View 1 (cartoon, rainbow, N blue to C red):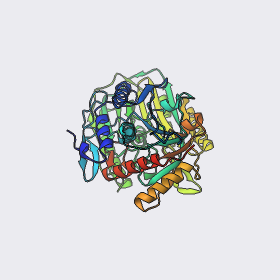
View 2 (cartoon, helix red, strand yellow):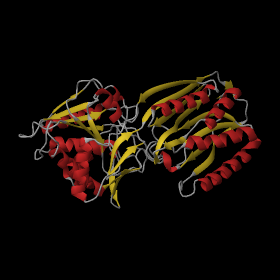
View 3 (tube, rainbow, N blue to C red):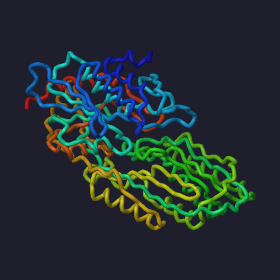
View 4 (cartoon, rainbow, N blue to C red):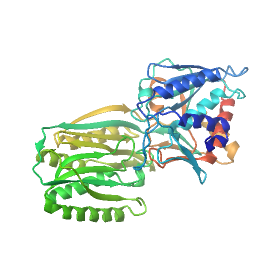
Length: 484
């Protein structure tokens, strides 16, 4: 039995532990959907899968609370599938294995799935607990949030009945979010006819060991982007040693800062030693540049099977120049909140082979005009390389309402329980609240959650001692929801 089942509150941890046994990487929702429907049937609440693939649960009001405003508890069912380089974990078949270290719950060299499994587990606990006092409650557990917020985007209008939305996808206990950035996926592609490899040998160059991280929550920390750092080396090697590009693979999630990139390069035999020296010099430079931020940098060369084909030289140069030039990281802070990121981009995924280039970037902004500006800037950069750029999965930001009734209630309950004032903030990470508000504009919305660190990485962890106060606040707030 997992040791986390012994933690308090029991309902939250037991349900989260059960959830860790269900494979649920983004794009593979069938098992977790079935699990949630089975759970609802077992605890005796109404549940169904809607046309968007979301699981909706409904629990009637406690007798005497029928006149209270309805509350929608919302979380997402999918998790980001990231693992350490030495892990053999298969996210489509294997359960998550957890352990507790120094007051934090971790997985074994994979993402933990507390983002947003803890939110789902909280909804399950509320649905299950028959001792609670509350008005009508709906659980909205959305599909594929991490890859494009598809469940929220396709949420049917008229499906939900509540007046208040509590999003359980925030990751800093003691902080309530009342606004978040919008985002847009940018995909740039280029097809071309490969050319025969006329070089003498080939090597694979790997750059890894960066911390990676959440491209919204941690984009301001100055963490290295493996794709952006690799292109510095590749362009230099092309310029000084005449190497040719055969392949590039870097990053695997649009909303995760890439921690690894590798390239296959073709070159003359007498250039291999110089290339190895260049790699080592670049590794030392990165250690100096990212001192105190990145502590496990690996940059090395291995022999590779000689590829039959290469990227055409003129295409190679244009694509590499575009990758080098394209914006990555923070573009601007919010002028009136100078400690909060307003606009950023993440050079998330690069896949290049001898006849195709595919690059994916996620741009975020709290302002629609700045989101459009940055997306157009990125497109313009790739236009110069002759690439085709498409925008998709665009969602608007969530405008804050500091006079929110539910916010004031949550602030009061938090103060009563802790003796401290909560921090109210606007997040740069994307939340589904803005999309849901677009379909249900009457909702009063706040996002909250216990403390999670390094989501979207193999060091994701959940702070144990924030679980109980999070649960206690949720239970008390539901009891004190005002009448309609």
